[in-house]
Amino acid sequence: MILITGGLGFIGSHFAAEACKDSPLVIVDNLSNTTLNIYHKLLRIRKKNYIFFHNTDIHNYAEMEKIIQFYKINSVIHFAGLKSVGESVSSPAKYYYNNVIGSKSLFDLIKINNIQNLIFSSSATVYGKPQKLPLDESHPIRATNPYGQNKIDIENLLINDSYLKNNCSVKILRYFNPIGAHPSGVIGESPKGIPNNLMPYILKVAQRVYQKVSVFGNDYDTHDGTGVRDYIHIMDLVAGHIKALNYQKKGVSIFNLGTGQGYSVLDLIKTFERVNHISVPFELVNRRPGDVAAVYANPFKAESVLDFKAKRTLEDMCRDAWIFAKDNS
Image (cartoon, rainbow, N blue to C red; front, top):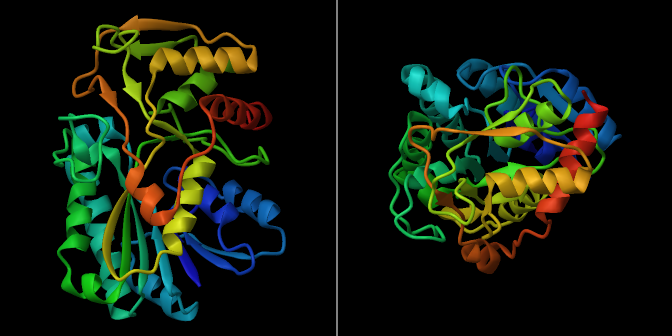
């Protein structure tokens, strides 16, 4: 049986909606950035394909051990973690404890219970400021913020563990920028509080919750001066995880999950407006410290090894995100 940590978050919930539809799943989530309502929505999507939910934290070693042993867990998909870059700068110790120490506790349980299939949710933030584009998995890693450094530290826990390297199939997936929503329109990205990411903020502006989107920087060396990122549809990202789950080669493997195509902030806003026939007011403001001009993936390794390639367009991402937001405002 599969255990999903952080399974009620944006990426975790979409994976839970689609993975292993013929067998039950187990989710643990401490509800720090989501609500129990997502669990009930997942039950609707999966219908009779059960999901067992436990409101607990990965730091709770005793409770996590009980869950792993009771359900006879044989695969772990590890999404749980705090993810705000800005908050990680202001509270680095909190982020290190929650993300790195929590992951180590989970990995100790994986080893003790001889779980042989693990996927870790990493991030393109590990690459820091790109030395070359597109970014492939051999690019040097050097984070520019504590959140990215957390991901590096957790990757190193996996890469340097001889037991995991010799006995487990460990997949480190470095995401680029997932957006969009489930095709049912039932679940999507709905963070608590003020959104930290661009698409959820665009949605709030489109719903007239906020007046305008602040576009940080218009003097980058890009085609329109605004920052360029590799946006990938959440359902493509899920498909990549399912491919990785079925990849059983022993050892630690690292894969980028992106499209290989970069779009600017203004590309995203204008595409959203065109596809959904709604205006999204924005203003150009100063750059944020630590932001870089462009980040996009070389997705070749995932294509050649996992047989995974993103299929959905930026238009699909914008359309699906808005369908969800309209029905769940």
